[in-house]
Image 1 (tube, protein in one colour):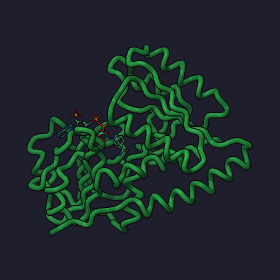
Image 2 (cartoon, rainbow, N blue to C red):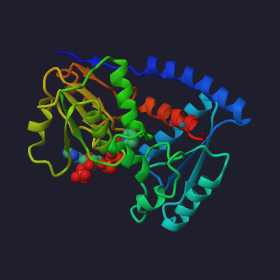
Image 3 (spheres, rainbow, N blue to C red):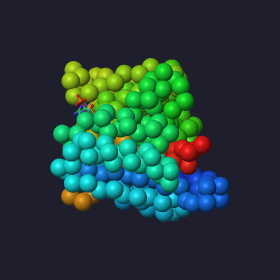
Image 4 (cartoon, rainbow, N blue to C red):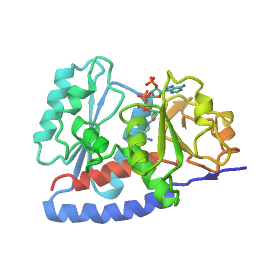
Length: 279
Ligand SMILES: NC(=O)c1ccc[n+]([C@@H]2O[C@H](COP(=O)([O-])OP(=O)(O)OC[C@H]3O[C@@H](n4cnc5c(N)ncnc54)[C@H](OP(=O)(O)O)[C@@H]3O)[C@@H](O)[C@H]2O)c1
């Protein structure tokens, strides 16, 4: 079997057109463009790729995108104060904190300052709690992008076995909650999982968010499975996902590539949330 490789370009183009119209509406209504601020602390190759793409997407749609870069050594309290200032800035509509943060900074301390309506990547406790409870919230952009791909490709997951590899707050956990909301039977795996391959082979839908290139190989995938790769890794200047693409495409029935799969849609989700923010 050779998988259908999902190309997110047509969906991204349609969403871009819709968002351009919404951004123009926003400008007319507020007499200024919508503004998304992204905060970056320290250097991380994947986060920098992500950050550059987000700036490009904002420009293409007509949003201001401010990149606020801080040294790795920034103190937790100083970063918290920066976020608090953006909360009070009437001209900033969305705030994204690029991960990973330096190890000495507790994510919760920084994200929980943020008003839920500006927390466009759904990282704070209010949005995350609402997602858990099934209440309206901003869904983290990767999970939202996954949902958009499933809808666009006409893939129903209800009743199917969904296995998520990775349990981060920005990746695996919200992806699992979104799939649960779609009535999938959900299993979350992580680095302590025994016999990972036997679990991933039970997946009708397999979503991988480990941050480890090649962490899922062909022998770990059920023939005909739907496989979504949320990874963004840079190896020798080349962007790759978390699965062994060449091997897995011979076994799966549907596969999202990296680059060109979920990634470009995640930016659009952040932009969509930003345009919804200040009501
Ligand atoms: N598409 C996007 O827009 C987007 C957005 C954000 C991140 N990403 C990408 O998504 C990937 C994951 O990011 P993240 O922030 O979720 O990473 P993270 O915080 O490092 O979490 C990785 C998760 O994977 C688990 N894991 C790692 N190696 C594993 C293995 N060999 N087998 C089973 N589980 C394993 C870890 O388990 P433990 O919990 O036990 O340590 C952890 O739960 C990265 O490539 C990142 O660049 C993409």
